[in-house]
Length: 271
Ligand code: AMP
Ligand code: ZN
Ligand code: FE
Ligand code: FE
Image (cartoon, rainbow, N blue to C red; front, side):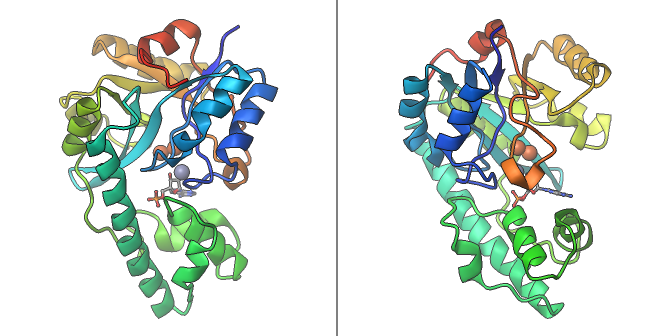
């Protein structure tokens, strides 16, 4: 049976598998298709299309963009866009700049609380899109926290004392750029957005789809989002949100879409 995991991260953002390792694992697991959805970067697609082709895997363009809507962080999955679209590439550049400034702010606050981390340490991995999980990992390594989730819960999670947000990019603008690149925009993991009224407000924007299948969702949790997608005439997507060792309890391919769904989303596969 055809299975495609449409939500996974690589070392280009906060995953721990390189694009090649991710594609090889997908092949070993018997997956047939994939979309790599790194946070705010499409750097993985410099090599992924050729590798996927050699492995006989179908690959659709993807990214997970960080946005704000009504003062809250929202993740938007972009699919099936042109990888060479100049405005989308500029969006990725803006995010890189935003992350550099934001991370500096977070590090300053951590230092004030007696938990110094140096920017060079963060940059050492050579990651294109450096995120809070990288900071959390260094906090763990240095013994400032006992677990990664402690780092988020006490210090760097949204609305925590060391979290800083700068130059956040609105959802509306992100959707315009995705559509300008002939892509499709999906609300990622809607269950993480607390209130239903908030999701209803979001869905007044021109979204194309909703992530209905996610990680290790039980069937009854999925059905809530499937019903909403059908009511709003939205496409349905799904994937594991695989991050490798950072979230070792979520295996690649634990959530996926079938072939008709893959074909509805991806009209211009990139290999
Ligand atoms: P960033 O992209 O730098 O804003 O970091 C957000 C990422 O951090 C998310 O995509 C998750 O992978 C991770 N994250 C956010 N909150 C938590 C949490 N409470 N525990 C563990 N990881 C988290
Ligand atoms: Zn992540
Ligand atoms: Fe996300
Ligand atoms: Fe994700």
